[in-house]
Length: 190
Length: 196
Length: 186
Image (cartoon, rainbow over all chains, first blue to last red; front, side):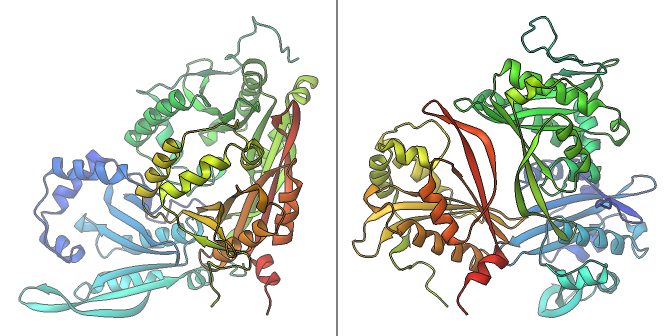
């Protein structure tokens, strides 16, 4: 069996609340980053607040939530985090949320790589049927990245964002187990 | 090496290259955290989705574990440690013990890939079985193994375990279904065999 | 779509903690019932203890991996037993535990009818891939009932249980989704 935590550029690793808290606080000072990942507006967190919040979230880790830190394979640098949240076991569907906080690694294939890793995890370790995500209309880089990872466009929530004095859409994308299995050379007969 | 059941002097916790010891809350979390980042190990050791843990998470797990051991009184947890420097190699567990029936489930794992294929698993299983039969006085021990875990199956068979149950397609992993096997060993079977 | 909660002899219900406690306190005093139900030493607890326990479980609310039903006869509307399903979500496997507490309803097909409803629920509502259960070798009536419902014997853990001075095996059974589907009328 292959190493399911590893991609080509990054690997999934456990979250260290103290380290991640400090990183979150720093990344959130970049308003472009915030506007790409959060539809609402939150206060700027301190490192301490972020750490406490993370510790609490991580305590409640269950079979519904799979939250990882993203590290570079070559030097282990912390780039961001990715979260798979199974919101409906009956349909075996999960939302994935990705945030790469380190700006210098945007647009270099890291997002696509980690998304590929999490999809493999979702389909052959948690055995889900579909993975869903939402992405903002004004984030073309992410949209392209997710298309490359295999997601298909499923719809848009029109005018769901209100930023810089105008309305923007939130796009909904999804990928199904059969699609992913076929794209990745797994037999689908089950 | 002959198994002598009723020899009080023979150490329960000493093997040739390994020993059974307690958890070291300061040193062990770092090491076990590394194991959890090895998805091969995780997929051999357990059936839950492989999940890496930070040292802090491992420490919390140890705390919960010791509390559960104390409250349930039906579990024994051993850290497998290297004889020469006491470093953590793996874990050996007997759990879900039903005292009235004299049965329990065993688990065993050597964490680092470099530490496997050195005979530590066999030594640890030897100690664990002796503990189960000669100290806990169990009538039988049970182990669950994934059909793809050839090393574990070979080890169990070497120690005289019998494959008793085949839970068909009970495991979904890596894009396909696998059977889960249940192996059992009775006290008399263990007592009658001399180790190979 | 079929009525998930209604069979030919029984129907499935959810009951208040007091009602569950009232019946369970009476059933548990039949040690044969207890010894068929699980491998722990048979014991008796108070109605109050049972009520508190059922209440606590109720407070936990609904969870995607636990489903508990009470069983009532259609004819007399009598509460005769229960079954629970515990689901391993990742591997899509459900474990069922069933107990008919009213002795006069043993061997009358109520258990088999309840198990049919249970499997229909597991495969068409919970959409699991397989359903598993365990029983003791001294419970041949249950073995026959489960075989009728479609379960296959997958093995036995030898000498698992010691009761009345004798060693008994635990029997392990399972039914796969495709097997259950093949049993359904077209």
